[in-house]
Length: 129
Image: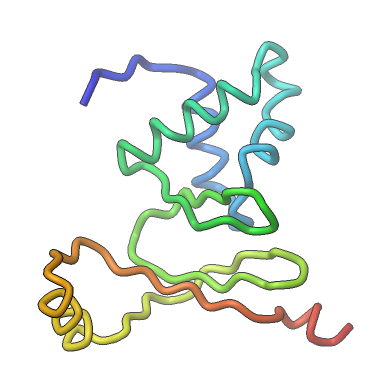
């Protein structure tokens, strides 16, 4: 991997993600940081998110309402995503079971490096409305 230079903007993105529990999109990160970094561009945000992800400092959660969402918490855990409002909630780690994962790896001839579970449905607020 290429050496990545230190960057105040990248550090700000990482700090924002590590301190956030709402799993923002690149657009959301851009809007939050733009007042402090007037020369920030959306392309810079995407480029830095890709670098942070490649370095294992952040995780991609998945696409929610057409936008990729990001997580600054890299320890193993699962996510709940609301199908209506798009909120993303951290859940404890879940697994389909080690036996099942091993069975699938033999059946399809692949090596498992990671297993993520995403639960989708309606959050409490959306369920009530």
